[in-house]
Length: 179
Length: 238
Image (cartoon, rainbow over all chains, first blue to last red; front, side):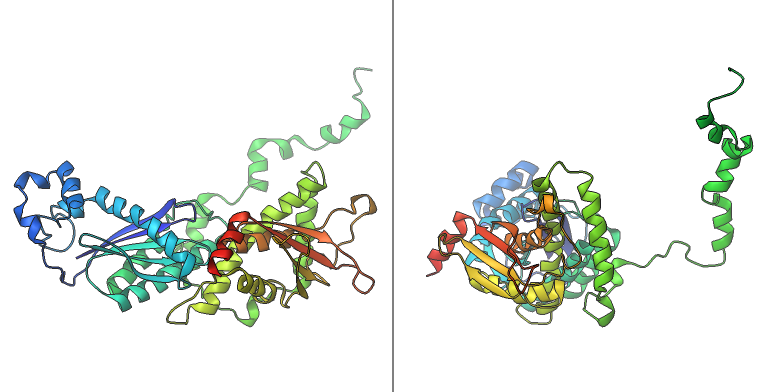
């Protein structure tokens, strides 16, 4: 089961992204539609089609970590597109919901999108498959703290990528703990 | 005549040549050379372990407060520095505003973190009036250590609000010369307010104006002129 985190600045510039493979097993049953798709549908381009057609990935990730073939909704560009598409929904919701943690704000095929919006309008977007509200809440809280610390640095500006190795390490550790 | 150089060159020509030669001056003025550092830190296991910003807690403690005189010195230097680089009062105010904006984005985020991080469901303000109240009390307390003195709503224009400070900390030790009487150094504060409003999704133009009264000669008004979209959004909430 994988998680994808994106940190987006108020002007929607991506500042940081992370892909995390959780050791916990995926609770999502494979979609029936995916079984009917022909084998060629897992090629790089067809992956997009598969994802958009409503089927989940044909090649399920058999082991955690890298080196596994990805198909369908697991492709990087599809993930990015889903994350970007969810921004519209997030922007609608932040205008009427006063919570910072927006639980399961959007859904696309097997992906659920949860978000966290800081007072400064920084958006943390997380794509996940299973349901794990408490873990995600705790994860976002820790990422928020790390982000505030990054921001206090006078050399950090609002539209710069967060390249700190320590930041990366802490976010990964937190993801391992909560997701 | 050619034998005697003009007197103003004498200062340059008088020092002994070894002071000006590159080989000697490097040992005098530059940092110690590489090997010296290596030998000095050879005993310690981690020569480059600097304190990490991610290890520092964000909570407010007594020692995180800064003395007002230290701030006054810093702010005086800021104003002097800016003044050498601007063409007029408007330009100076704009620059102070920009500087305040950078601080405001950080103040907002840090203030919210301190207030909300302990709660299970952290909240953001989405209505304008609560945000204005929170700027008046919370932001002022976080930045200046006391709440502002009043909030007013403009009678003529419904998109204008004012925050009034009778004795602003920022300008307490500044006396503006008569020929620049238009200048309000509280533009810095206006920048902070603008950043907070912007961050929370209420774009506005914020300016500072001197409005002295008999009892408070330093009295300052921060004028908030909201963008149209904010008013439209507030209408929808009703």
